[in-house]
Length: 498
Image (tube, rainbow, N blue to C red; front, side, top):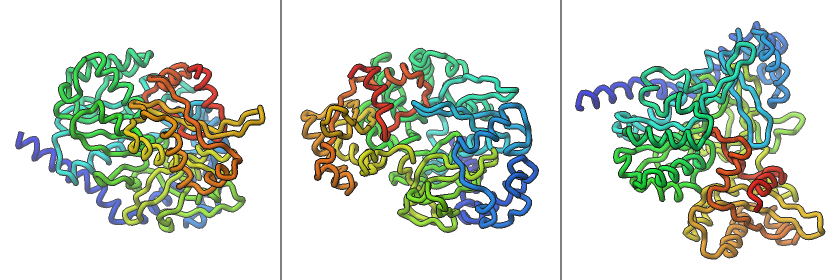
């Protein structure tokens, strides 16, 4: 065992050099990536269309490469899907990453051999950093349980297309596959309940020390684990040490998770996307994630209030400021250029460049000029739940606008693990916290343009049931926590007959 500890310690120190290099010169890493990307893509269709042969500075880059969303990039992607090569990046992509929201159409994001390291290599940053700084190596001696979207590929003119977690699973090194559960065979089970049951059967036979998941599906697994085995988590996995959560602010859901994981454990946060793993929590017990700056993504940032202006301010890492809410712009070695991925972030610090996810450009409520953000809903519901001793399984918020002349209001659909004794008092306190965070919301409520928020209870397992009905049972799917329309809420209400 001493020899194994010595080997693991040496391995961690060697691998951490890559992180140390990034932290020593973050701006230099980013500038080097920009230059190498432009040079590599000069002869592509996109490079020729945008004068890559004349770009030498970031100012040149901004003038030559306009900001784009997916729909604006789609003509190039359609050419790739049709079989053309050298379009956005040299050659043809190795894969197409499929992604969609609960109500949006499927998007296909190129994944090249070069960009695979953004996913596979990037995924090692969080556990690597955790082991290096905490000196806790025991989690490396057992198995990790990874919640994937499944193992289903489709062929598009010779290019395999699948959710990015599926692509990552198929491309990790053999030794990592040995450490990582479940198997491709289990991930290929089409019915998600059967897949979770198979994951439980497999997990029971293994020494699980890490779980990587999104909160909503982790809770589905934990409930099923308790029901199926009748045992407490600490009986089944006494050496469990590290929970890596991703995709959203986990604070509202952590109390409910701790009801099931009834033992001490550490929590780390990561920021995965179809374009790559973008950031990881680098300090234990302190929120905020370090951007991955030397792994195949050149970042740009646009102040959120300027995204839709004619000439938005656009800065590289060199000129970001803490406290500003930015729309994230990605340029990758898969051929995404000036790509607005829809996420918004804020820097908690620079040097080191730590961010927090503040939401989605499309996930806010401003039906009455209030512009309530996902960040405001998540912080407010977490605080209110703690105040009332409640726990949250999942939630979503939407504006409810009646056509009968009555006042509209924000409708909160909440699935509680532990419900508050007084739901009316809970709603009043939650509304008060939103008012404290958002002056515009307080103004429209105070002046009776809208009523205070109302809560619609979602029964136990309700969000899980809805995601099943909607066909969104990949274990990386997530629920939008705020929308500026009633589409998602209406579908949820109809499916559950609330």
